[in-house]
Image 1 (cartoon, one colour):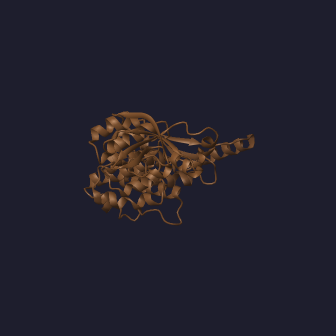
Image 2 (cartoon, rainbow, N blue to C red):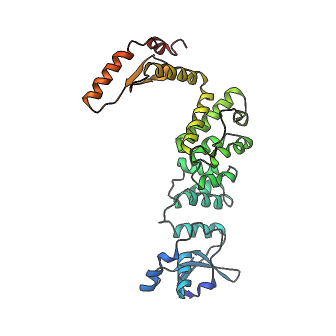
Image 3 (cartoon, helix red, strand yellow):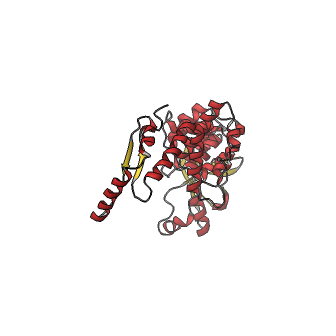
Length: 317
C-alpha cells in the first residue's frame, strides 16, 4: 500500500543508506538548477523502519535539496523486507540505463534473498530481460561463481558469457584463471574461445586446466605486453593445445608461404582447414604500375618449388 499524502522532511531526517539502493547515485549537481527554478517535481520514496525514515528511491534529490538548504517532498511506501525495498527501488529507476555492474549488484542482492526462479521471473524484467532469456541464465549461473570474478566483470575485463565455460570448471581451475583476466580486457568471442579450448583440452587429456596453464606458452600478460598482443598470444596458445595437428599444419603453411611470397605483396591463405588442399592467393594495388609489378611477381612465385608441398598439406590425414 502507498500513502499518497506528500510529506516534507529535512534532508537530514532521511536515512539514505541501505543495501536495496542498488542503482548508483546520480550527481545531485545535475538537478540543482531544476530545483532552484521549478522546485521538486517528483517526491522521493521512503518508508518507516524502527522509527527511522529510510529512503527507497531518490538519493540525488535528497542530496541536491541538502546542498540548497531545501525541504524534501516524500511519499511513504510500505515495504516489509529487503526484497520489497529492492523491488520498489528498481521499479522507480526502471527508465535508467542498466550496465553489467548494475545488473551484477542487483542479482547479488536478490539472489542472496530469493530462489533462482523468483529472481528470473520478478527481477529480470525490471532490468530489461525476459525471464527465460539466455542472459538471465548467464546471470543466475554467475551467482554460483566466486566473488573474485565480480570485479573482473565490473571492470569489463571478462564478459558475462564466460560463465558458460567457467561454470564447468573446478573452483581451483577458476581461481588459477583469474590472473589471465586481471590486466587484460577480453572480448566476448576471445574469452569464450580461450576458455573453451582449455576446457576441451582438459577433458580430452584428462588433465586439469590448472595443469594446462603450467605450459610455457600459457603465461599471463606481462607488464610490457600490450593487452591486444597478450590476448592474441593466449588464444593462439590455447588453440594450439586444443588442435595440435591443425596448429602444426598452420605453422608449416606459414613457413612455406613466407618462402614463396618473399619480396612480394602476395598473400596465400589456406581454405577449409587444410582439408581440400585449396588455397587463396591475393594482393592489393592502387595503380597500374603496382598492378604490373604484382603480375610480374605472380609469374615469379608461380615457379617456386614449394607449391606442391603447400597443396598436399593435411591431405594425408
